Length: 446
View (cartoon, rainbow, N blue to C red):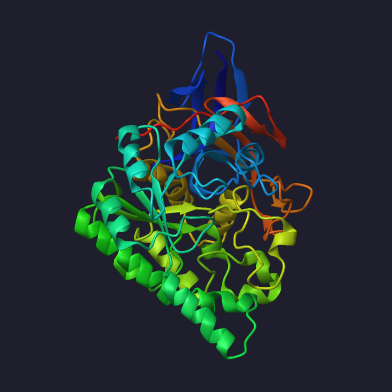
């Protein structure tokens, strides 16, 4: 059994910062104390001047396997996640074939068991025609993170716009329902109006086509369905000020039936950046005007927005080129999300303890993940060592995504992820990935 002792390291956990020793024995944290002496051999890590954070849990990624492995694989993107301090991910069903049956879902788990560098779970996909299969997931509540409904267009047969299907899923599933909320009818109407006016859409038209009203209408519908059926709803990638009045902050997170996610790109970029970055920042829902970003920051800090994620969605650079209808939507972000939020800590935008809460604690609470998301005795040792004395600039040389590019190229982070531990094993250490480490299937307390 491997044993690791972090000495004199500043632990950031549960809204506290304290310099302590942390002992890891095997897969789990065994002791947290100001001074730990052990009578056995350990790997000792000097933590002076460094931070120890719980590993990030990213509740929304697209790792593209199976079927789209020219863009990414579970192996490549989980390694990129580890390099960014992400120790667990939940992956979306719009792979090819779409994960619309339990057998297809289990195929993805088999791939991850063999290749994922970090811990994993996968959403069951919903279509207009697979309600019976989706409801079978009720028997697997401890093993699957949730069901995913695209209430806006997606890959394959995954736009769910049939009211009968939606009502049945919201009424009968015992799982968390995660939704992509954009009103498809409004999106198509907005696009048609541009074309009728002789306007050939470009990058800056994306937030005009996928506008704030499209987001609001769909999120409102999801909230109405969840309220009607008392469902457990989690709305992904909130991107507008308009949606924020739909959500509350007057009860503890563990008591909420409707929770929300905001993604790092909606906190960082605005519509002003299309002129510089073009289709590199085309994503769904669209990055919008600056006032939306400002409102998202406010709602994140006052707990109307519950968790931070990436919606990591890699495409080849060739797939991000014009024309508008051919340029794929999605950004690769999983390696750089935590460093980006640490940059905003330095900028005074958010407290470090809040970042840890929104990227680790709150995700574990929101999904009822068993024994992860916190630095606690008895919990799995999913840990991140941050060197806050060393900066790092994003470049082609240090990007680990299979697609090989990032919208953040040239951006300098004030901190560097030094090491990432998954279940007590160092999967990433000073620029190197340990290819022998494998993550575990996440388990849920339901």
